[in-house]
Length: 394
Image (cartoon, rainbow, N blue to C red; front, side, top):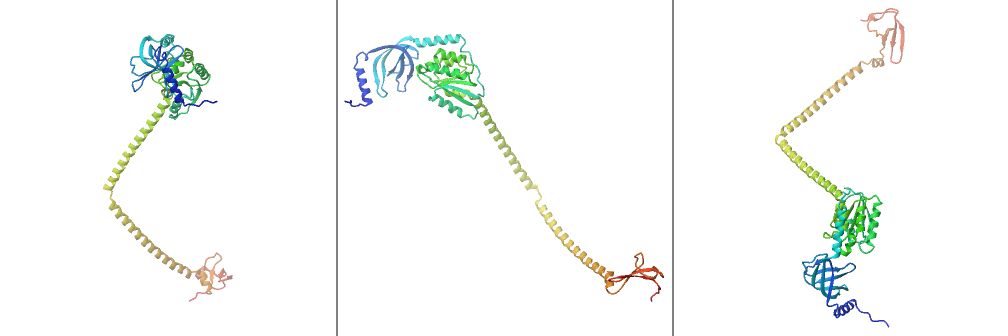
């Protein structure tokens, strides 16, 4: 027989009532270290209480302005259930301060040792214009979206390679180390190690000594953008460049490209402004020159000269036509004279043309002698004759 199902809210309410009915869980004293301390706008204090292997969420319905992350404390309170999420938490009523917690003490000691060994002093400059950028982060995290969005805002030709890693949990350390090794075997300009914000436990993998040592050994310059502005891990200290957030790290890597783009935009703006100024100046000068010309140019005289020129042109044209007509008439008269003196016309009338043996026309008796041979030309024929007698005609 199947049991009748119940709602999740009913189950959480039942668990909460069960816990609250337990006298031991209603009167607890728990020792641990504070992590992820934060104050809400309502004045409540939220934090995690941790030891070397485990943590529990805590809420104090008052403002704790004294405690800080890493403090070792003893809290008094009761165990309860946050029904909305089905998670249990310790409702803190009182806090006793013991001292600095072991987790933070160990971390500070490790930080001091690495600093003494010079591992915090390796600050190499990254290429001003990186051609290939390697990113070690989770492809499903918020950090990669912010990074790629920042890269997309720059008009530059560079390649981005993403090494998908775990960024929290037991296997995250090996995953991050493998990513660093992978990019050190590639032709990479710079490595970016990044993840979004989280609790102290979420970011604690970046405090691991092996991860820090691998970053320090990297041949390729390393930039970190891990968590929020208040978070700083051992990995940040040993990196070549540390940035507060993933977006800030992305901005730092492409700052050279952005500088070029800003300078080009500045040059374009300056060029446009200077061009507009020059055009405005020349336009003003042109208007001034047009005004001066309009004021001093002898327009009326020019029109008068144009009219005179037109009149002269008409006069010249008229006289030329008249002279040409007179020349044509004279040519006609001359043509008539030529026609009247044309010997071919006289030959048609029956006259003859007499010339000596040399072709000279015989005009008087002195041009010919007795027994001279002469040519007598008629219209359609000619004859040769010998002079027998010469008589003068009266």
